[in-house]
Length: 447
Image 1 (tube, rainbow, N blue to C red):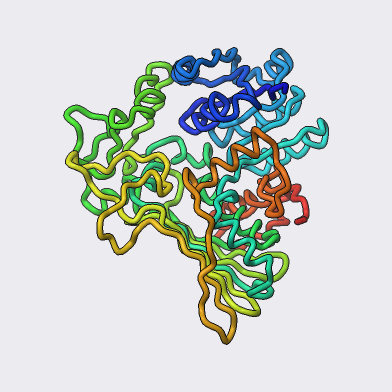
Image 2: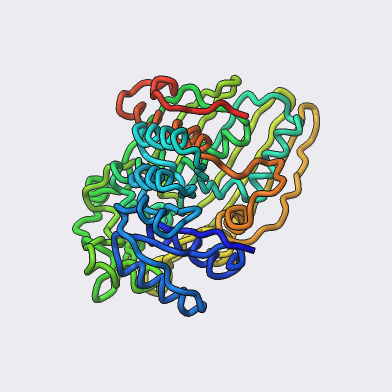
């Protein structure tokens, strides 16, 4: 069996999942032929791991020569895991070079980026897959199946609350994501997961968005108001800091290898103080979103909660469905005075807290009118993103089989999710509601 020839653009920590997949369980289906990153040291780290696994080192190319590399190395697909604001340029280059693209969410960060990708798809006829791995989590699939069954009737409203704990949430304010020009803010970078889920659950598209929010916890002004200054510029210090918001890159071997030991190449600091300036993204957000078929969603995101997880309540003409998920029940401080650096907050990555009243758990309930609540079974799953990563990788590298849940996401799905975030950002700027149609996005209709 011939193997699919892959390229990779962007060799940060997120790339590790794809590199490990190609070198390990999917080695019979795919080979990593060529890759690029602005920091050569990160490629060195991944290359060493490949060699340990007995795999050859991919060829290297410059990040501004993607199309040429696709042709030179006869690549079939290229995975894009570079910073969000670069996605559109890289995806377009992949398509124009003659390969298909696999891109981490979000699809891009701007209306112009969406238009460029849409034009390239139409011009080349190539495909773009957006890796919305939360679609693959069994709990989220169970809710989609429940809604599709009609048990709660036509959906009238959705309440969706997402909490990021003080370990995970603070991390967005330490790295490049804190710059809205590079990440689009949490409405684009993080919440695109959530907006995609709602559109997928309802099989619907957003039509109008109103957003309120701001930077109310992180950043220098908030730290000063709470008497938390002065503070060091970064978390990796000698002697080590006893600070619950400090990230010492030496505590995590992956972060140390990929970032601390590669700073001399580009000066990028992965452990900036989340209470330093400049921070141009928000940490508290609330939205009201109208959908084409009549439902309304209330959505909230908090990036400094004491625990992590989400609650979804879907109201319908015949009843209500409720999905409750605890991904980490608490953030505890170790002897160092800092929480453990956790990259993936799935249940497998967070230590259980003995006797906690908020254990890592998930529960789906349905209650029809004039009846009692019933718990809906959720298939067991392990691994990152609620068990979604493993099945996503299987779809990418082995191929999508018969899937009635339609979990594989196209560029058009990416646009529909991104539209909510872009409209939300515009609403924040203008202070009023924003019609999605006024963004001028090439949004494909729902299935």
